[in-house]
Image 1 (spheres, rainbow, N blue to C red):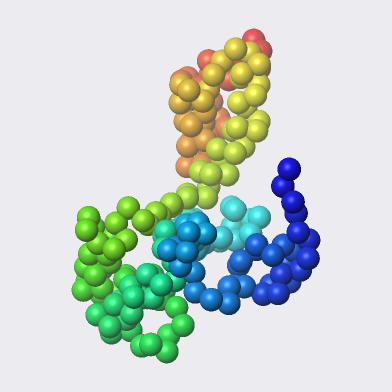
Image 2 (cartoon, rainbow, N blue to C red):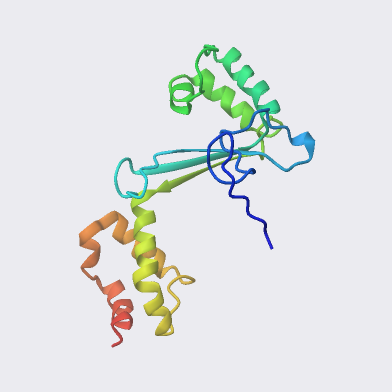
Length: 187
């Protein structure tokens, strides 16, 4: 059984001594053997309103501790001529404007680079994501109850893609979807 500590954390006031978000007093260091540190950031999150705001949400992560990250950030600041007073290295400002900076990013992520196989970026198309959730919630169980697997055969994905890209027009059946929809209605 997992022991839960509900004492407020000194750094954040959130419950639990192991909740480390913004509460670390010392830099993280993977060499201590206390586990792997993963830094994660997002862009384009609009709270529960996934269908509002920009079209995409991006999640980026890197498996790195503060000790190694500091050296890489210092290298980025030096080679890309970014002021040390800038508190964050923002991707859009850092890499979208200058080819020499994009080259530097490529070197960091390429085989042999310090971030190779340690960084991941996920881009989520929010309209498709919402449509896929709706298809899963509203159609998949009904099809499954009728003995049809719309997940494995890609039909559910096509429904979500049509709904996300065509909007209300996707609700008008064409001949390729009419057969699947008749299964859903039970006819």
